[in-house]
Image 1 (spheres, rainbow, N blue to C red):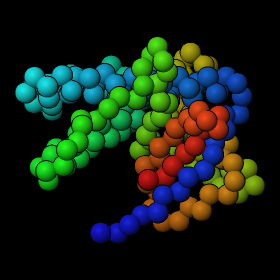
Image 2: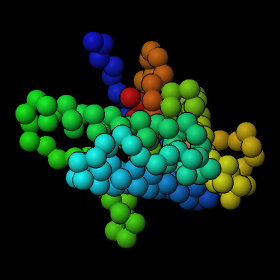
Image 3: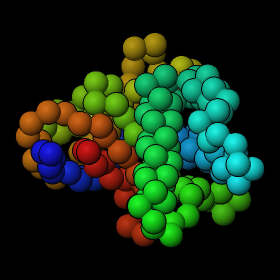
Image 4: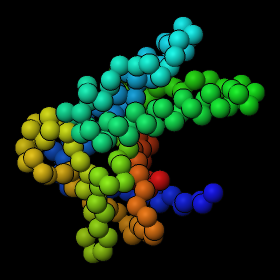
Length: 180
């Protein structure tokens, strides 16, 4: 098994409008995770298959874009597979949890597929990520436009481009990108 190093760096929206767009994108990802996870938890506790769920990708494609919705769903499936594997190994573990809630605040994060973002490093380092058409329309982006974020620091980017996780660190009031 080849161990891939993760690479973490701060990203900054270029305007207050871009920050609001990024927050909405991350919040929609958390909402998707929570809705899917709720259905899977209910099925689990009712002794039904956790894999028979509604098609949440269709519900979120207009906000997140198809590939990003797919990545959040895949990450949730992976969390459930890990839960079942741990149980089979005799570990006492709980089902995957939620990413906060709407009233108290959700954990703002998302996953961007490796072929859906671009990272440019150098004097003006930046990362561009996809956004669903509904958010593009709301924020005045064109059909082919993507959200551009400034990269802080000098990420060491070697090898194959992996999936990108973007999350908001409330303690540091910073958005972080993690290449997985």
